[in-house]
Image (cartoon, rainbow, N blue to C red; front, side, top):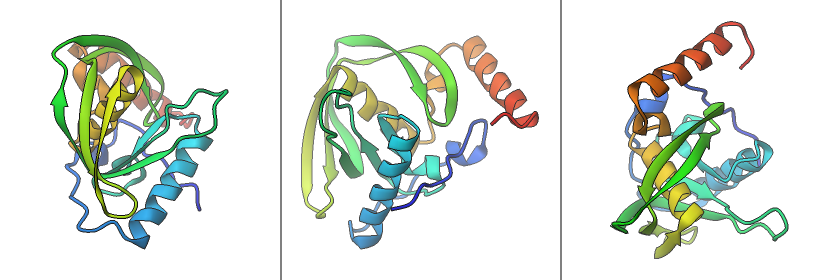
Amino acid sequence: MALLPLIIAPDPRLKKLSMPVGKVDARINRLMDDMLETMYAANGIGLAAPQVDELLRVIVVDVSDKNEPPNPIGLANPEVVWADEERILYNEGCLSLPEQYADVVRPKAVRVRYLDRDNRPQEIAGTGLLATVLQHEIDHLEGTLFVDRVSLLKRNMILRRLQKLKKVGEL
């Protein structure tokens, strides 16, 4: 496994549409392993392939509590097939927007269809934090960041702050 460099916003690569995975094979499994290692090293709970400069529809998540054993999930070609009408608010952050947070409203529960590490079709139902993380990471595959779901004022403040930190070499 290997640590992968994270793309930090603002960066046009984060706004691109990801391509579907034809088959989950050894290369995709290696990518998932590397993404998990990168996510854990950055203290994250989700990571999408575009964040490590791979325009593929691949995400990894692990929302296990710090007192629980890790429970990583690798998903290829994830798609929301059902979303609850009830909404919840989470204060979201992102490894591509370090130390930036904003309240985002999303469906409280979702069902996601995907290919697992053995290239088998699966579905996962998520509520609360898992639902939020799945939706957040799937958004990345569409070129959408969590700041695209907040007010223009808040989004511009966060992106300008990140741009300034990148210019002075703090990111």
